[in-house]
Image 1 (spheres, rainbow, N blue to C red):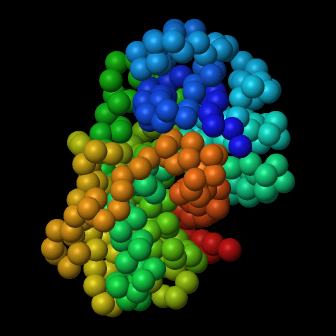
Image 2: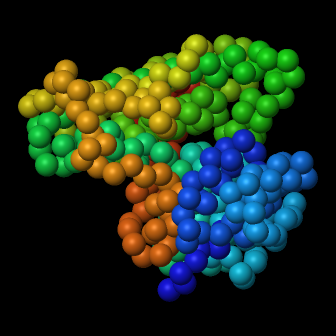
Image 3: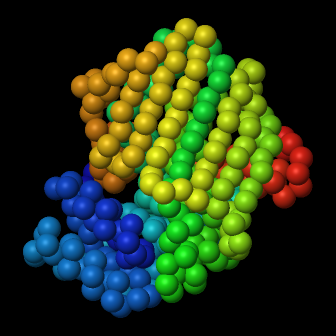
Length: 336
């Protein structure tokens, strides 16, 4: 087992800054390659890497195939637009690389199932950058459900609002990849909303059986606002509201059981709170804070399991596809 994880970043857009920061907080990690079709993006991220590690000398390239095929790398972080994840992640797994992929893992259930199978064949780790999987508040409620403290789950509410639509109204932003279905694979539901969907599924551990939804595109090529109701195996029901026509980031996950209820409030990765039966609980005092990148490095080194794995990607894709289909057909959709 190597003592250092050598990782390559595929795509050096805005989200890569956070990954660089979190990866280089791990002394066992080296960012050994940076890849983007835009030279300016590569140079910007190189500067960020060298602010943290002045002696760093990562390989710079424009073709992701060079990163995937580099035998000196142990792993890659795939940070491309959503709909472009699948072929790159699959090629990386086939090349023997561990993979951390930005959310959502993919935008089609068939692709999600194929990647999980490929990771199994390759004997490599497949992780998704869902921060909520590593935040103490979400882990605390998941543990309460697993130990029976909330009792049988009866009702769940997942809510997200964000000034997502406003970004497309800004000058020159109408051509953003997030408004291009062939790159984004969807709108706010698969973008920030994917965090909320995945958190609902992972925290509760419930399996959705049926979904009915309405979607408003607000004049864009992709969804902006989504309202859905979900029925789970065992009888629990949920309401899910994903709003891109908001004014600030506000995310709430409320889980009501027949013994107790919990409410998680999320504003940023640095600001969350938890209430159980209306009383504030300090989850951070009970569960250590982590993040997807730290977990990924530790998992490669054999220190911990992946917190948000390919199976969560499959479940998220299944529910997301059902919501889109329901809105398109104006009818409930069964989830197999």
